[in-house]
Image (cartoon, rainbow, N blue to C red; front, side, top):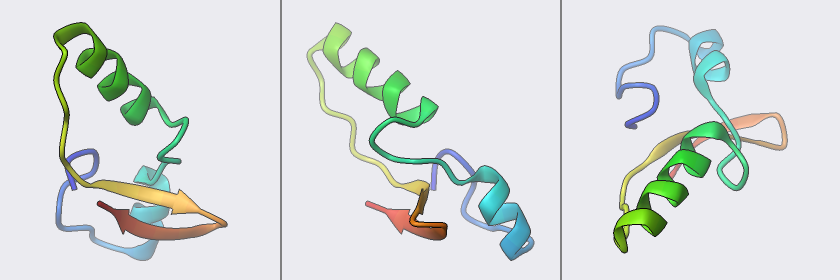
Length: 57
């Protein structure tokens, strides 16, 4: 996952690095960059949703 790295040391670390996909800082930055360059960005992110962490793709 590009916002956190692919290896996490603990569940706590995953929660610390996870962020919402739809309005999180990483997603917002990617959306702005994609708009500016007329591009699509395909990646994964350490997502937090409903107090659970998952890998959003």
